Length: 365
Image (tube, rainbow, N blue to C red; front, side, top):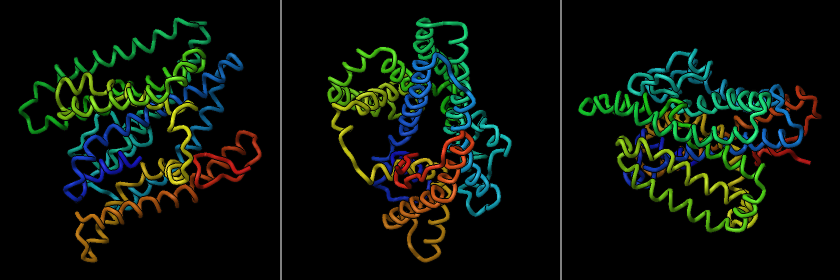
């Protein structure tokens, strides 16, 4: 989470030394995509293995109560409190409510709450993937469905290459080059499927090919190192993120690296699996709320500290902003997320159970 956090912090006044270590922070979104693809697909694949069906209604109820209440709260802050906005203009409200803000997003004119684009990608995945899986089960596609994953991977390469050469490259000398690159390449879901597909691939192999999971578990630490090596290569390849090479090959390379890291980390033989840190689990529990609110909270905090005479680009300001973002996320979890999860349990006919505020969706026995 803080990989993305400090990458975004650079759009505000910040210490100069932050620029280099935070440059690769944009890839934290791809890690979220890999994790989301793995967790969501894993849940659905287990259901398929156990029952042979996909129950769409419970799935969408779970997603609704997990995602929508805190999102609507933060969206209301942006709409109703102009002081919360880190930039001047919001995209149209209907784009936020329909999760289509990632299409046609112009950072130059409507950059406020722009980071919600990745949630739009996730929501579009949540809508399409379970329905597609249900359709494949209905037509009894079986093993033939596995070919969809490499086909979509290959389609991503072709799509990014075509859009870059046809729409982005002709504007190479234009001051709006970077705006069009983000609008046409970075935000649309059809260009950002690599991480989600990597997560779905891991879930499919682990669920339906047990020998693969056993092999990954056996060599988990080595696979983890290979994943880091791929990410290191991606660091250099994406140094100029607007280049054709970075655009076409950077996203899948990053996704492959994070995919190997995740595949290794969920295996018991991996050193990372055995780490039981209360700090990291607490941050994981707050990560969604931090993601939603951090830009607005940083903006408000910096303005307040600046009025008190503290330099906005100081390390102390950055530390205080980090703390206020964690506190704001904790309030959102206490006041919105946990009550929503309890309501979800009631809607699903479960007995509501106390949720641990330090654990992501973890119930207290």
